[in-house]
Image (cartoon, one colour):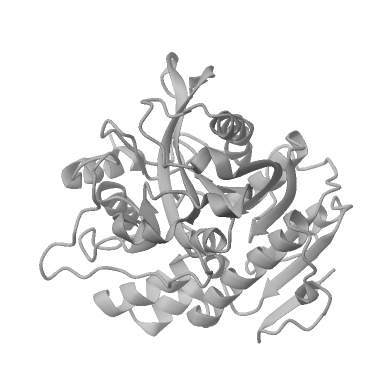
Length: 390
């Protein structure tokens, strides 16, 4: 009998597993092994991060049924005190899930180590800023909660708290006890599954803000974290399938005051039919508002502030960390320029990163901090190859 993709990936992960998320320090790259890199955030604050293991006792696990409750992994990114630099840097993705992600994409699993992020594990939260807006992130199909770390750490370095969520059975993830999760073709996961996790996660962050520890193992949380959460100012963004999930979550949970889709297809069954009266920004590359598309239909349901930023000659990956990481992969593996273009298009990675660091921040500054943003008032964006429509 042919093994499912999920079982094959699980075998790959198990063969390369090197520990769990409870490790005190990120694993160092083996001698002579390259390490991918990410661009640094540009904000004035240090960035802290911590992972959470959350269990929803109101929902059974999709595979095990009532024998096990639904569980997921999340991470919180936040502005930290200057001494955060003494804490270990968090990896973009732990080694074992990283191997699975590479295998799923057809790359050598040991080509390079996962990049280090700007996030410092367990760093003390910067209480001096007061309570900060909270933004939740949903990843794309066969993805993981770290796939837009460029955006996430930029927001945190500018004073936001960002909660990134792994949708179990659609994410490369690792639990504190060492269990590994991978996506699979044998279990359909829809944008509605992604969206269903969001109210539960927001409830747990509200618990944290109230001084309770929502982590299933009650692992120690960073000092001051509960004191900087402003649950009255909540936003959400998502990549690809997560962009569609952002719209669905906004429809179901009015705590979310502003939403951003990073090239979401805006396609699900049944189709999105409800209207959204709160601000929504679409950043599109592959899934543009061409005639008859799901994105075009979704646009008609936006009845609050709305904008569409289209990236010409890019791909869906222009809105994620992959646009920066894949050129590094190309150099390490000898990938042809034609193959690399097939992944990321003709849009320059450095420009894509600049757009990622600029527009999400401006959007949430406008709608969660009420800071005027002339960036959205002009039909001529300051970056070549992009178009803004209202």
